Length: 94
Image 1: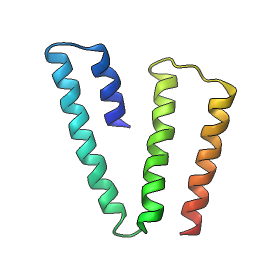
Image 2: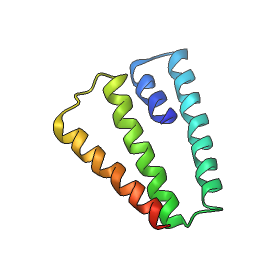
Image 3: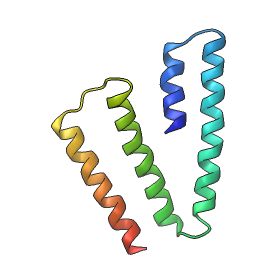
């Protein structure tokens, strides 16, 4: 979620601030990939990757709602809830 936050902030910045947000984006991207690689050491890739993307998707939607003031409509929350349930189900089956 860190890299999506930085990307969202970079969209609003220019000059040196833009470069700082892009630097944060790159740092969080590398950290995120390293953690995914670490997770695949104990989980099958077919579970680790969907969980990784699901956490990122849910976190990014919540970040958008709470930080960037995006709409929290019924359907957005409904589908995020079904995504969370699916992630938990996948993890329980691993």
